[in-house]
Every structure is written in structure tokens, then in C-alpha cells.
Amino acid sequence: MKSLILFTVLLLATVQFTIAQNAIAKLKYEEAEEAFASNDFELTISKLIETEILLKATNPKILYLQITAQIKIIEKNPYDDYDLIENTRKLSTKYLTDYEKIPDNIDKFRDIYKISEELKQYPNTIQKFNLQKQQNKADEEIRKSNEILIKQKAEESFKNFSFYKDFKIGLTLDETYKLYPEFKKSYKSKGSGNELTICTKNKPTQYQPRCLSIKNNIVYGYDITFYMNKVDDAQYSIGTKTLTEILNRLNNEFLFSPKETTTESTSKVSGMDLYTKTKDYTWSKNTKTIILSFSQSTYMGEYLTNGDFHSEDESLIK
Image (cartoon, rainbow, N blue to C red; front, side, top):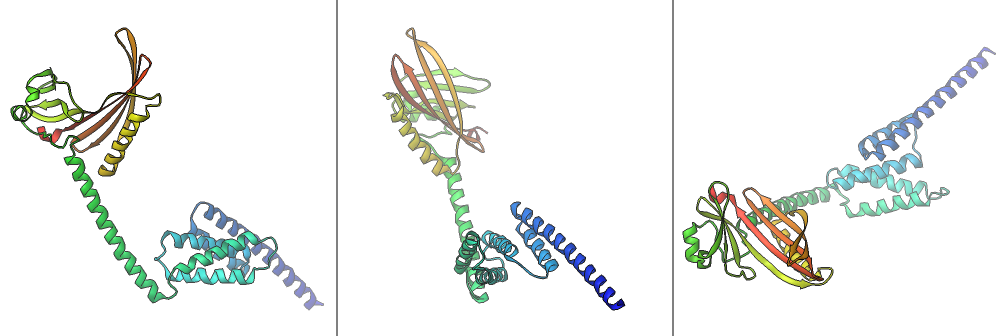
């Protein structure tokens, strides 16, 4: 009789202990789900392992979450850990073998199947894995080297860029007059200190400098008109097409995008309203600034577009 009572007590204690273990295991699994939702996949796997230890077994839910967490780690850095790839292969095979006939599990089964197929792209031996890892490292070094060269080329391109290729800045005013005599007859506007702006009295033609920025007797900037006032359609599509082509070319050449600003104004011309919306696209780096201005105007029922370009390099006057 005493033996029966002792057995019953031990059995009850074991049942209670098992229930407690299962409750803790459930909480551990919930923590694993929370970690997965937060993209902390290493913690997810750690919590799942703790869950399995408490249960002394795995199950479809645990295995599914572990495989999906491990593939996330692999995708982030495929050639970091060969053992992780092999382990994920084995777990995927186990899932597809053991849980093929579970009711209402087709979606998760399909997910694991896709993961097992994805894993086939990686080498199936440690030797092949290490060779590929070395090749990837060499390819990455070449890619970074090429990227540095491309950035250096873009830096030089921006530094030396001149919309009007044959026009030189950095000259003295007298040197500029000799090369560009049209500026001898010009409108002059003095700024603060030694700053001066001169604009040719000649009617500017497209892609020809029309104004010069001068400081300490050095020409350090200029303005041109790249798109003359032209009659456009109501959507300004003709001028916008020209602007877009120039923007794309400069963005690709400089490898960085300009800051965009928009201003609007209304003025009177011959007693009629001239409404103008101007967009400025400004590239600025180190001492150099390039501004592309594009205006859309409405005047007496006509739609007009105009484009101006301004460039200056303050390093020339330092």
C-alpha cells in the first residue's frame, strides 16, 4: 500500500513538472516568434533550441520557424557559415519527410520546399564552399576598386565640368576680354567687396556665355542660356523633355542628384500679367556650384519655356 501511495505521489509530481515544462516551453516559443518579427533571427533560433530542450523533442511549428529564421541569416551573408547551410538543408529534408501529410499545412510545406530549392544554389561540400567564398571575396575587392575609380572619375567630371566646353574660367578680366571681345561692351553690376558681374550687350545665342562672375579680377563663374524662350504646349512638354535629358546626363556624370527648389512670380509686361514658375536644380560640392534653372511662363495665352545654366568655382579666387 505504501508503495502504491509513493508511486502515485511521484506520478503526480512528474505530471505537474511536465505541465510546468510545457508552459515554459510555450512561453519560449512565443519569445522566438517575437524575435522573428523583430528580425532578430539569431535570438529566434536560440529560443527555439531552449524550447526543444524543455520539450525533449521538436514539432512542425518549431522546425518551420527555425528553418525560416536560418534561411534569413543565410540570405544576408550566404558564404559566412557552411555548417549553417548544411544544417538548414537537413532540417528542410526532415520537415518535408516527416510532415508531408499534416492536415492544413500546405502553405508552410510549400515555404519549406522553396527554401530547400533555394539552398541548392550553394556548394554541397566545404571545399567547394571555401573556393567560392574566396572567389566572392576577390570579386568584391574588384567591385570596390572599380567603384572607387568610378567615384573618382565622377569627382573629376564635376570639378572640370563646363556646360560651354570652349569657355575658360579662372582667367583675369583682361585675358577674358582678349579671348571673348564681345564682353568689352557689357553691362556691369558691382557687388560687395571686389565682386563684379558683367553681361554682354550682344544678344546671347544658345550655349554662349552671356554673363560673367568676377572677383579679385578673376572670372570664377558664368551664365549661359541653354534653352531660349520658346513657345511650348500647355504641359510644357517640349522644354521639359530637353530639361530631363540634361538632368539625366548630369546626374549620371556626377553620380549625385541636385537639390531642387521652386519659385513662382507674376509681373507686368506691357500691362499684361507674366506668370513664371522656375525650378532650380543645384549641384554643390567642395568649392563648386552648378545651377540649372528651368522656367515655365504663361503670357497672353502662350506657354513659354526657358532654361539657364550658372556655374562658379570659388577655388579659383582663393
